Every structure is written in C-alpha cells, then in structure tokens.
Length: 217
Image 1: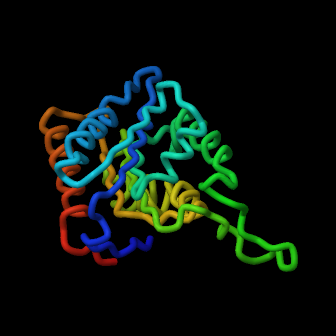
Image 2: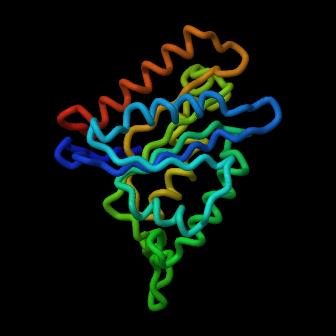
C-alpha cells in the first residue's frame, strides 16, 4: 500500500479529528481504544501546535456537525477494534450515516463517473482532497497470524487484507493515508507490560509522523 510523503512544514498548526470507534459491547469494552484517544488528547495540544476535535461513537452525535468535522480537519485519526474481520457495527453505522449526510456537503460529490463514459473514473468524486487520515486497529489475533507462513491471514497485512476496503473508502472521499499502526493479542494474552509498550509505541508513532522532518514513501 502506498503511503504519501509528508513534510513537517505541511503539519504546522494541524487540525486533528479523532474518532474513537471502540464500541461497548459484550466482553469488549473498548478500553484500549479509549486509552489511545486519551493519549491523543495529551499529544494534540495547542502547545504542540494542534487543534483537536474528538468523537466517541458510543455517544450521541449530530450528523451535520460530524460532516463539518471531516471538512474542517487536516488529519482524521480512526481508532477501531476489528470484530469478525471488519469494523464494529456502531462505527460502520457512524460512517454510513455521516458520509451519506456529507453528499455534496464536503465529503463527496459523486462516484466520479460521467454519463458519456460511465466505465471509467469510479471513485474520483471525493471532496476531501488535501486531507490525510490515520488508522489504528486493535486485535485479539497475534501479529504472527499475519506474518508467518501457513498462518490464518496467509502473510497478508492488516492494511492490504481485512482493512483494504476501509482504505479504499477513505480514498473515495479524496483523503490520503498516513502510516497505520496495529496492536495485536489484546485479549487472551495481554499483560500490563504489553499495554505500556503499546502506549509508548503509539506515542513514538505520533512523534514520527508529526515531528520528524520528512516521511518518505
């Protein structure tokens, strides 16, 4: 998957929109996604050169206001667990409702095709060009399920496998990807040491994206 190049000069006083998709359901409390959102709040401060908006999909939201957050933002950060190899249903509902409400209101104009040649240019009608998005996911599956020969995901990465459609969805709006980060084995074998390591890894990920001089492809 291609990751866009970004220079620090492009990231001065960035407007960040964080979406916490960690749904409260059954044995899944969305705790680590909440932790990531709390780390965002501590990192994306005015002192560090950011303006921040946050949406928790478990709380009531206004569709027009959510559309305007996408239009306002320079970077949209999605935090989501992966349930049955896809998004939790409340996050999927949020995206379905908000993106539909954003038709010709800043998210997308059309699917991009023209009536004189409808076979080409599908997916080019987005209105969020110039924006970036960043994805974090949380899994029960260990990282080795994606990397070892003979294991479940056939050595296909999260971004090119289960979340491929999610990335094409964002491309449909015109947004471009920042590097993703994925956290594994957060249910059966999670330890306090692992949580601490993941928190540190996430903060380093943010520093790498927003404080390094240049991110190359």
